[in-house]
Each structure stands twice: as C-alpha cells, then as structure tokens.
Image (cartoon, rainbow, N blue to C red; front, side, top):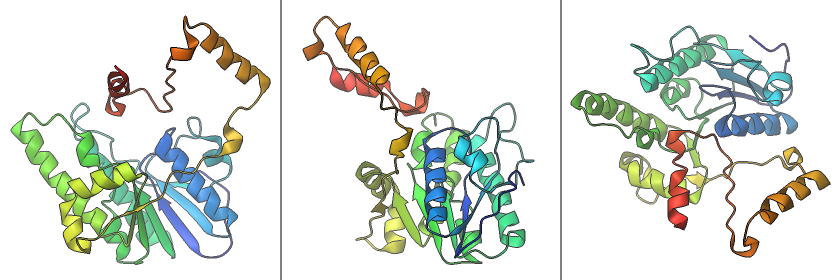
Length: 253
C-alpha cells in the first residue's frame, strides 16, 4: 500500500486501473475518484503500477492507492505480448481485491475489461468505462501468429466488456465505433442496446487564466503573416503513434 490515507463514509467503491501514470485516462479516473469522495463515497484505487514520482498530484496526495500485480512483467521476450501482460497484471490485481480487499458496493474499471466476470462473482454492480476499443489500437497484424494471438484477445475483450452491468463510452464517436466493432455485445444485450455517453470531466481550475497567458497567445497569433486566415491547432494529448495526430493535419489540407 502506497497511501496512508483512509477514506471513510457511505458506500464503498473500488476503482481498478492498469497504470496510474500521467495521461487522459488517468486524469479521468482521478476525477471520478475525487468526485465520488466529495459525494461521501469511500473510494480506493487499485492498480498494478503507480509511481508517486510520476503521477498527478491528486493521485499522490488525495487518493488511497494500492498496488497489486506489479510483480508480473509488463512485456515478454523483449517487448512482446504487452496486451496479454496487461490482462494478466489486471487479473492478479483483481484477484487480490476479490479475496483480500474486503466488501465493495461498486467496482469501476476502464481500459482492461478482463477482470469483469471475476468481480461479478462478488458484486453485480460492475461499471466499465470504454475510452476506445483496444482491438482497434493493434493495427499491425501481418503475420499469422499475430492475427491468431489478437483473435483471442479481441474475443476476450468483447465478451468480458459485455458482461459489465453498466458500460459507458467517452463520446458519441466512440459509441458508434463500439457498436460497429462489438457485434457480440449487441447480441448479449439486445439489438437496440447503446452504451451511454459520459464525457470526461474537466477541472476548470486547472486551466491557466491570467494576463501573461493571454499575451502569449496573442503574440503567437501576431507572428503569422495573415492572422485572419491562419488555423491554429492545439493538441491536448501525448505525442505518440496511436494518437494519429497527422490525420487532423491531413483533414485540413
């Protein structure tokens, strides 16, 4: 246990997240946990990885974070089987929660749905937040072995996601992608089923609103030859391949 903070109050909530680092998914999980605490819920966050030196301040100072399953490697054979290892690490974390974590009224998971059926053995109120189907993030499937490997992972993802009592997505776009790529869930829950859209929350206090910030933006715009016809694009995410940021630039050409 990395946190000495103890949450007390009403109903108990366990949040399971694969890597409590620095990213959009982590920010959402932290905001969810803080919002629940402010409403009187007792919240604990479980994760296979948490580094107090590389995380959001709120995770370090305001949340009760427990680490389990970190002994299993993140990858095998020089960086391979990352998704499979993430499944196993989350499963180990969920097993600890199930047998030693005590009673919870609600379980909240995101990104990795593999532990959903296990947690439902203890409590039916399992909530899954889908940022985007993981199966679509694995694009290099040229070899037969890779296709064979991903077939089973994709099937597990779809079936276990569908077993959650409540499924939500982060946008209408993701809702459409979800329904197009998870046909089994439509069969499990009915053809009319649509996961509810819950947009990520935003902490307005975290945004810089001061004179210096305004002047900086105006200076950047003023450097353009023709400011009225200039398009300024702001990318609020990590710069990595799967974000496909060039697609936004190509769309404007």
